[in-house]
Image 1 (cartoon, one colour):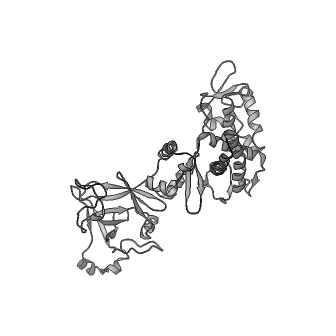
Image 2 (cartoon, rainbow, N blue to C red):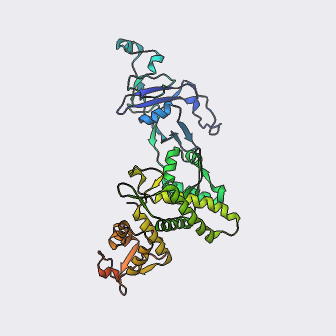
Image 3 (cartoon, rainbow, N blue to C red):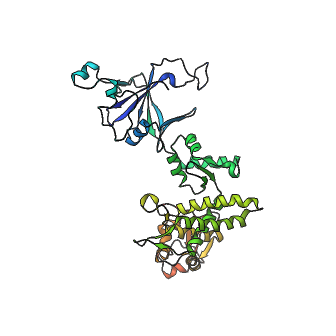
Amino acid sequence: MSAHRTAEVSSETDGILLSLPQSDLPTKTKNQGIGAATATKVADLVLFQLPPSVEFQNDFYGGNCQIVANNQSASLVSPTTSFKLVTVGTSNTLVVWKDEKERKKDGERTNDADEDSSTASPPPTKRSKPTAPVTSCRLIQPGGSGASFLIGQPHTIDPADLFQWFEQRRRQYSNAAGMVSTSTLSNLFQTSTMEIQTVLSKLPNIVAIQQSEVEQYWQLVPDEEVLLGQRALTEYVLEENMLQDNNGNAFLRMDDVTNGISERLLQLLWDQDAKDIEQLGSNEDRSMAIARKTAFLAQTDPSRRKFDARLVYLDPHKIAFYVLRDLFLRYPSYAMSDLLQKWEARLPMSETFEKCLTVEWLQEQRLVPDQLVLEDVDNASGITSSTSSSSLGKVIRLASSDTVLAWKES
């Protein structure tokens, strides 16, 4: 890219203006396709305003940002965040600053070497100095027609769009051929790798089949295998003794949990779809990937706690729900007393889990009435509101017999 100039902006919020030579921005003409350079002069400039984030500016000056674009859109991407580049319509934009005489009169520095330290706002600590000249200036938009400039709008990924992309890819590929790297997804969706990983970590069907310190490769797995992974987790929790920290919070070691889930899940996968010995290898990788994702999603909210990453603090509400869902995958309805008995038998003996074995808990989680219906044995009479003896004599069933219970984050 040709030489450019940065300038500290004094407006409602401090930021940075970056001027790019127009000749560096490919455009489409009548005789040239997209990507061909135009014959504009190097002196013709296009301005765009960088976000005011100090962290982002550090990444920018450190050379850790890039522009990712296709024929429809472009984004400015750093290692941790991304901004969609949007053209602010013709605004007759002006950037003004004091001329050399006025600056000398005010005692300001005027040479380019001194201008590397802006007088508009002190530079953050440990920030690399830009190689381009920096000066104090003000951005003015008086209105009317004229030049346009770019701004960066926060760019967030819609998890539904990402999931749909994986669905379409699964129709084209199978097994390892369907894996895609984090960096590839970052380029496709024009976002940072951290943002991609954050979204993927919340989607239970997308798992990291292969991972290393350098790269992760992701693949979509069927709903059936996700449910089997959660069943394997509940079996492991029932068989193993939960540990407790100094505050009485129950936890397990991450390696123990993932290995325990994977071992049980591997057998379930083998029983379900293994036709020959060659299938076992791919099942081993897949079961470990599903085990890692299952253990991660079964935790209490990681963003609200500060515990050792090697430990798993399981959410008892989620564990109780996984067992309940598995029971309703077997039968669409139960006598309430029968359900409570089967439910309790598959949970650890703990006061924490006992609190989940109530109609009130089902109502708190909006399972009743959204997904489950509680009614009289002979005549539907609506939903009960207590755990009185009359509740135990009722029948509980799926609101729709062909649905699977879904956990809703509070």
